[in-house]
Image 1 (cartoon, rainbow, N blue to C red):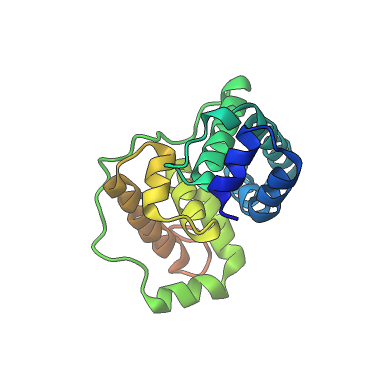
Image 2 (image 1 turned 90 degrees about the horizontal axis):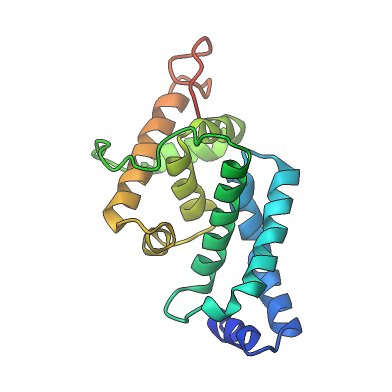
Length: 193
């Protein structure tokens, strides 16, 4: 049964089996997305994931089949994460308004993609140093396998803005990984996430 149909059953009060199936299908991807936002803090990611599923139950009447279920679920998780950040009086490390960034001319080449797979520890550190808005779109696109259209809808951004963030993130990742250290400019220079 499609996710939308399961969610509509939940909205009608048929909860146990549909929510269990939605959880089975989406919890791993949801947790991975949140863990990247939380910079690997497992306890914080688990807490937000739990809050997301609880919030889903209270907002099930808000779901419309015009939005993909995963988009709806991940938006709830993103809002829970943002609430946590705001509640702790932490500032976002980078502005989510980076639409004026220059767009690099190319995407990842097959060779660059192979290099990324080969050096996962360096890649993880480089990903964690990306600005939040860039890290978020990379994680949604490649770890959660969301389409650029779904990401744009979830974030409330234009399609081209999401593509720009992906391209800019790839350029930064290439730059940081070029010397094999996983840090831009070599081991002596720190880069802010």
